[in-house]
Length: 131
Ligand code: ZN
Image (tube, rainbow, N blue to C red; front, side, top):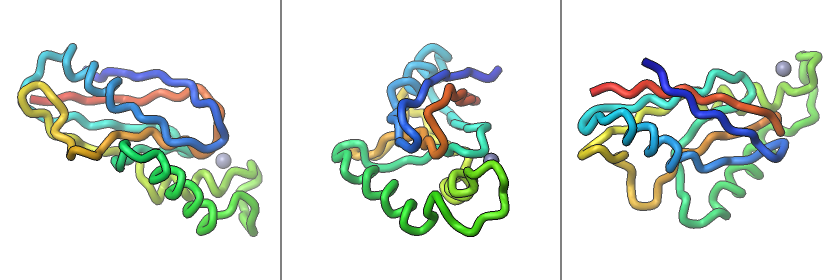
């Protein structure tokens, strides 16, 4: 069975901490030992794991991605959001997290981030929780 998390992003680009939303779905599943796969099926969004203690870390990731892949450039894609597609591919569509004692086995400073690169939009995240 696949679990779904629905979110609405607020900005053109943002990292949204979804750790507690994933934790809640794992708790409801009742699975104590296993893996959860977090999958983003959008081509202009991604999912990553990084520091959630100091918000300047994700700001730096976003600003650095913008320097490497500027919104305006010599792109072929007519929709005008090539930068978002490229960022999506670089960061990636999925992450796997270990479940131990019914909890996500994340490092002390780690959080799971939904990465919006072409918002604001309504987005859907799929979870597969396995024992
Ligand atoms: Zn496009």
